[in-house]
Image 1 (cartoon, rainbow, N blue to C red):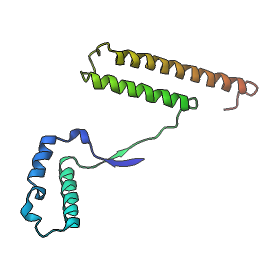
Image 2: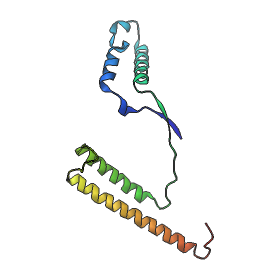
Image 3: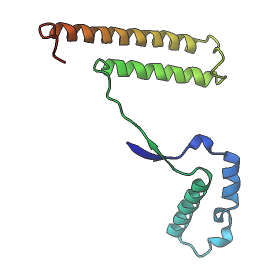
Image 4: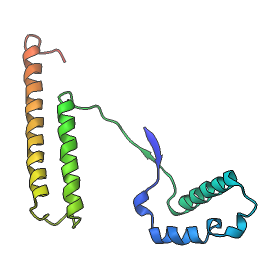
Length: 143
């Protein structure tokens, strides 16, 4: 699957601010003959032109992979919880990722939930393969 995206992390807010100030958006003498629709069109075209100049659109190709057969709704829900807690830890401590984060309540909760998530995945994977092997025990060559 291919999508077009802008690398927003590369946007320099100071440069964007300066470019907007030097554009026709900040020159009221250019708008005197424009009605509301023309002003909206001017705004859209100027902002898009500035963004194209500062952070051009890129085509990004994603390769979707089929989910593991044991990865069910329970796993998805727990994964979301782990990601939410991880985000909270990063938000409270935006220090360098190479450093060890300080031990806070958020860090302890994230660590415990991550461990529980890994245990859940292991149990689901083991249960799936036990059932799969047992069901195909009578015909081992079947794939």
